[in-house]
Amino acid sequence: MSMDSQSLLQETERFVTHFFATRISPAFLFHNIDHTKDVVKAATFLADYYQVPADDRQVVLLAAWFHDTGYSSGSARSHEKISKEVATDFLQQHQVDAATIEKVGNSIMATQWPQCPVNLTEQILCDADLFHLGTDAFEEKNKQLRKELNALFDKKLSKKEWREKNIVFLQQHRYFTDYARKNLQPVKQQHLQELLDKNKDNDQPEEVPAAAPKPLAVKKEDPIGQVDVKAEAKENAKENKARISRTERGIATMFRIMSENHVNLSQMADSKANIMISVNTIVMSIMVSVLLGKLQFYPEFIAPTIILLVVCLSAVVYAILATRPNITKGTFTEEDIKNKKVNLLFFGNFYNMSLHEYDWAMKEMMKDSEYLNSSMIKDIYFLGVVLARKYKFLRISYNIFMFGLIIAIIAFGIAFFLSDKTTAAS
Image: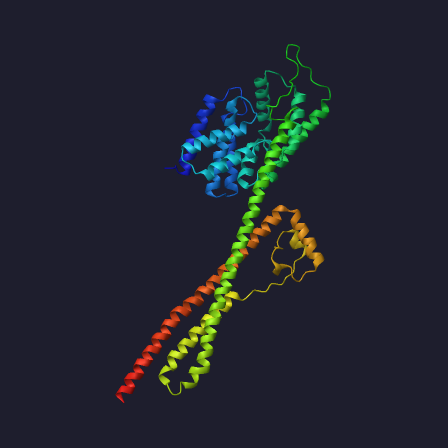
């Protein structure tokens, strides 16, 4: 039986803490359990800030705990893949469902440089992993990372070399969540400017001690940018691009299937409404043309006839309400497009606009993938709202017809029975 979320996270914390103590070299002065705990703390804060659902919150915290366990291999190269394997093995042993395991693995892989998250969960983890870049802890953490690299490679990076690597890294890095861009990015820019200013003031390269080995021949394991990092970055970028492409195709397929399902359900609702309208109008036509003219001879059938007419008329009214369209103004403004307020995928929002205006608006929307996805989501949502309204009125119409018809038939039966008794008595 699988564990509840809180118990799983507690067991994960115990496992990862023991894992770092026994499986990861003390030479990792930066990528240690303290860094992992800082990432978990930042991920918890961001998850709470965005009020992410419980399932996604569990995913991001699990990924935060496991994201650096891959350093057990002894180097930074492909540590994300190893971290994913460690997390997958642990979660499978604790009977976590496959969907959650896949999300945790994807979140860990999103931290691979260059970072390329595709959803909020992955964005939160990426920003939590480098949260310190936009805080006052940057200088201290940066010193730890330099000591780690010097210890691992048994070489000494000069201050100038280290500044240059950090400048390149900070220039290439970007935050993904709105919170980080608003609150962390400005602080990170201050750190970058300080490094740029120091670099200008120290044009002369720092002397390397005679006893020290020659300057570090940067290796691929160094996570802050080296000679070979471009090749690895290109490879990672290709993998991330392929993953994003698969995700985008999956999203497009989802929208297409949902739209088709909604349209099919709408057509079914219209067909049901048409059946109800046709049946009841035929019944009312027969009653008006045949039965009403003879009620003067059979007064006992007046009440049942009125009941049946009211039932048929009510059923027809609700069936018509189910299919009656709503009319919108069919216009939008340039301000609506810039503020992403109007859904251009629904004809009711643009049918009174000129082709030139609509063409401009559509091109603006297609430039902005977030606006486009938001419009498709709105289109699906309002299709669902319309469907709910249709089926609500249809249900009322069918209930009126079903129960009303039963009552009318019973009324006709009673009237006929009383008519026979009156005739027999006379």
